[in-house]
Amino acid sequence: MYCLARINSRRSFYIFILCTTMVTVTWFHQGPWFQNVYLYMQSNTELASSTSGENTAILRALHPIMTSLNWTRNRKSIGALKIKEHTEALKPCLSSSEIPKVRIDPRKNKTTLARVNAEIFGSMVRKVRHAAGTANKSLPSILMKRRSIQKAASSIDQTISKMNLAVDVDDYRVLPGGHWIPLSCRPLWKVAIVVGFRNRFQHLPIFLRHIVPLLKRQKLEFSIFISEQRNNLLFNKAMVMNIGFIEAMEFNDFDCVVFHDVDHLAMNVRNYYGCENMPKHFESGEPKWNWKLPYQELFGGAVGVTTSQFVEINGFPNVYWGWGGEDDDFYNRVVANGFKPSRPEGEIGYFDTIEHNSKDSSRLNIAKFCLQKQCAERMSTDGLSNLKYEPPTIELHPLYTNISVNIQRLPWNPKWKRCDTLDTMYSL
Ligand code: BGC
Image 1 (cartoon, rainbow, N blue to C red):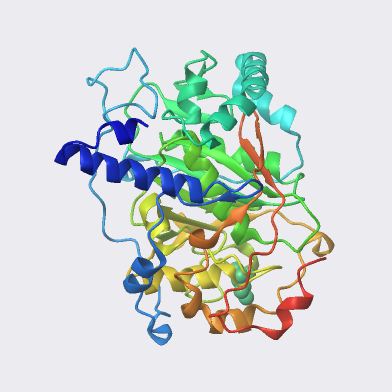
Image 2 (cartoon, rainbow, N blue to C red; image 1 turned 30 degrees about the vertical axis):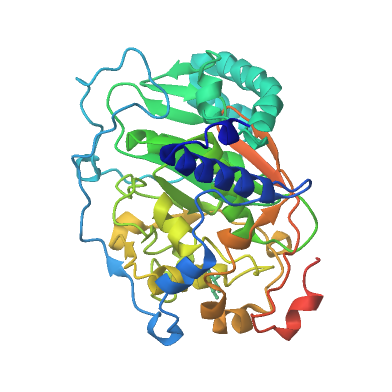
């Protein structure tokens, strides 16, 4: 009605067109059961024109880190939150070259979330746990508001911060769901760590015990999202990471996203998780490969992109069910979009991994070779652009946010060549 009432001037006409478009777009994308992904998406045609389509040209070696981005970048506001006592007088936080050289020997012995919470939050642990519990009670209504047609303007973190549930720990302010904001300096980057996850509950506390202190030493603003597949279909890590990305952006306006395996532990504090030299593969070697990589184009374990790069690349492919291949496909997308991925050299990029018995690892993806051969034809049409999923269950924990989702196979686009093995391989 508001749009119609104002149609009597030229300026109003444009407002009318804008309003109508917004209402139409919103209307078309509200499905009763599925969450359609339409935020920030380019149209498929735009994406198609930005990819070269030359599959042969895409396999190139990774570049060691060389170029540095603009260091002088300062945040105008601290995170999504305006922390009152912050002033422009605060110095920017550490750049990667200022991080002290520290090699960490990861502790891989078993632990529990309760112990890790106590270790990381110290005397504030009760307060932080209580804050997470309180925030969880309000979360369903916050989510409903954000998912409703009149999308709430404030992010989830902003809404939660207004509830006075942040707790100061060391020189950080921590929001329920594990969003850490430095208090003594202006953070250079706001990083979402997204972990594609299923059935690795024994690894989670070990991972958190390791990564949280590392990111704090790098003086980053960060948040950890555990994006969990909740069903018995084969593990589709790529799809749950796409979902983790979309959901993370509901929480805050992250600059960069690091997609991380839960069993990978960076061994050097200088392996910087800020948005430098992105897209970036963080690993140069691990013990099982004699501190090397099996092949130069490897792009799994821990990879980072800026938020806009991830959207431009159209995210991960959604068609990889079972272990392997999705990261190789993602690498091809990165290169096909004209990006030169980087990687730290030598010790800085060493990772240790947590052992697990092969029984609990996912079944091999038998279609991966076939899918990889045809990756170019799906780049612009399979990924963030066709992602649909049931609204996930979201839970805020002291150290992380859990996004649990019952993903399903997405419709096969008739323009993509089929891989024969695919039909038989979705369930365990
Ligand atoms: C798989 C990748 C995996 C790599 C290293 C390749 O064969 O396709 O998904 O990251 O091996 O384990």
